[in-house]
Amino acid sequence: MIYLLVENLRRMYPETLSFMRVFTYAEFRAVLAIVFSFAFVAMFGRRTIRWLVKQKIGDNPVFYHADLDQLMKQKANTPTMGGLLIGGAILVSTLLLADLGSYYILMALVCLVWLSVLGGTDDWLKLTSARRKPGSREGLYTWEKFLGQLGLALLLGIFIQNHGANKFADFNLDFIDQISDMSHALTLPLAKTWVFDVDLGKYVPSPNLIVLGTWPFVLLTMVVITGSSNAVNLTDGMDGLASGVMVIVAFAFLVLSLIAGYVSSDNNFVLAQHLLVPFIYESDELAVVAGAMVGACLGFLWFNCSPAQVFMGDTGSLPLGGLIGYIAVVIRQEFLLLIIGGVFVMEAMSVIIQVGYFKATKGKRVFKCAPIHHHFHLCGWTEQQVVVRFWLITAVLVAIALATIKLR
Image 1 (cartoon, rainbow, N blue to C red):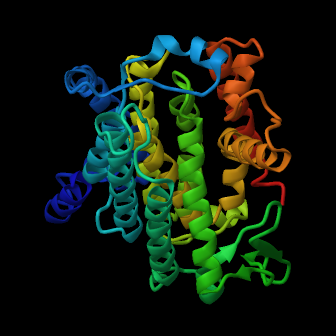
Image 2: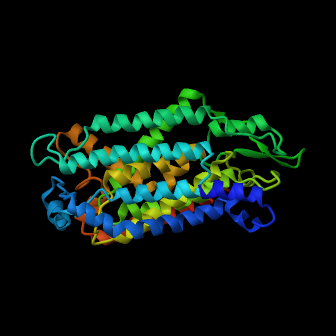
Image 3: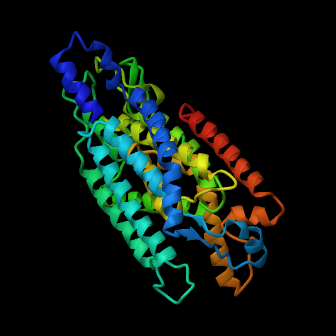
């Protein structure tokens, strides 16, 4: 809204309001989104927590492991559904600061609202409904939640694949068709999206681009968005763990979104070309969404750090994971997501391995408890040690991932 308002005012009064040109830069609005969403959560945090307590929306976690139940018993009745704060901050910040004329922004809002409603419904049923037997913590059936995630990912995949976002009419660029193909290409680790043409003396699109057809692209989108959403959900099990890791991951994708979509004002310089990554026109607007995620999670961490005053619940974890997967798909960096979100991947894989091994061996376990953060807790690490060490691992993984951009 602010972006569109500023644009209209600048057209009407180009000389008087020239100083407002700064709002046209996605990088400025992305930083502003961090500040605004942090302030939003800080402002409404305490009153939201009081409302959740009043509604008796408190968690009573049961881990079906005697030692872990004992370690975590002090968390009983801590209010959850704090994801309302996170989702609200991201929504308001994006509406105010992003270009609402951007197709990618509209799809991001659909992703946010859809998964927030899905997660909120799951939390509400878990905490307030005796849908199953009395005392049960189960909310939505697993297949219901999974179907909701897959349905969203299917729609997003189809719309992204068919979106004609590459409006290059005013660009001073050669090889327009090949550049357009980048928005549907598979970006493999260390593979060059651009190659240097000695005769032309500049970088041109690689002739070896692996351009995905409609259904392979849609299938990949479904795997990434659904997998990312569930992985963040599994990580949300300790005070500050998921929110702290997401701050670092979202900031990395803020940077990657700016790289993928940055174009100079004269349409001559494309940053993605310089750094050999896919150029996705208008994807730099997603940096505003990523910035809003950073600020919202930082603000939530204020209340979620140990000892937590509130948990995000599925209301927060599902949309956070889904959004970061969506951004990765748009900017064609699904494989970098595996590195940057390595902690999320590790958490999800630990559950898959534990469940698979348990069924295959009829009762044996690989880990003391899954997800893996509980394993380390049972091994003697304090909760704070687990959380901070997972933050540190994420920071190192982000550094590695960003370094690989030039190692092509």
